[in-house]
Amino acid sequence: MIKAWLIAGLALILPHFLAGPVHAEAGKRVALMLEHDSAAPYTNMLREGLARAGRDFGLAGSVVVATDDDDQEEAFRRAAQENDLVIVATDNMHEILRNNAANFRRKKFGVIDAGIRAPNVSCVTFADEQAACLAGAAAAMLAKARGAGAIGWLSGMDTPAMRSLFSGFSACAEMTMPDIRVAQAIAGSFTDSGAAAEKAAQLAGTASVIALAAGAANPAAAKAIRDSKALVICLDAWQPDLAPGKTVAGITKAVDRAIWQLCEDFAKDRFRAKEIVIYDLANKGVGLAGFDDKGKYPDISRRVSELKREIENGNIALRSMRQRTLCDCLD
Image (cartoon, rainbow, N blue to C red):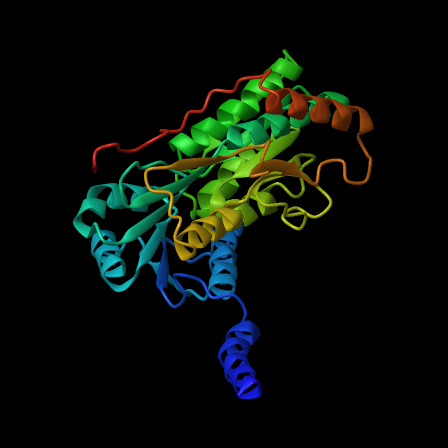
């Protein structure tokens, strides 16, 4: 009798043990909504975060691309009807979610890079002005070391996120080198390669170090300045091949981790409704990658490390130009 009981018990337990952990939301559907399907680092990291979450938590993930030429609001509504969690990560989609979340109260929504406080919405945003500050300080000191007096910043569009990044970049450049000149150009689109290349070439006429924040148009911008003396700082991820031999740093933000965290909270039944989680230097959600990795600029690197500690300790306060929340109105 005892032997039979043990065999029966093992038959019940072993399949679950061998199958690995069972999650509360296993098999649920998750959609990531994008406005373009380019191979830009930001988009790639979003996809990677979703794919990893799907593997880790047994979620069925899909990517929905709704461009400006599509009916984006209708695409969002369809995704909300067909999925259990919908994650948005771009400006237009933030607005659409704000206007529609109350119509799908039984569904969950995740937001990357904006804040919407609502009973069925959880958000992760970034204090990437902190990382941009480090990049601005490094750029200013590099320019001075090269005998130059100007650095540059290229934005794809004039958005709150871009303003916040440029504000941190310019503030710390001027704090580190008060007589540095910081030039800014705006391409008008994150996908217009021609406009980004034209603006980058203009900046390269005077700027010794240029931060490229033109999204999917960054490769064209980098190509336009490859024959100049300008060094390059990239955005979203460390991309040494963006301008081979000339890329000195990357302003990074862990959007893949943010996607994964939203999915983990959902899968483990601990969805953070109405909460806005901020990724910053202290929790390694943003950072400055690649700079001085071969010890080329030890004095500059030391000053950047000191500045990082000052920010993490709260001794340097940087102003965010982002809208901290798009809405508190869906209760």
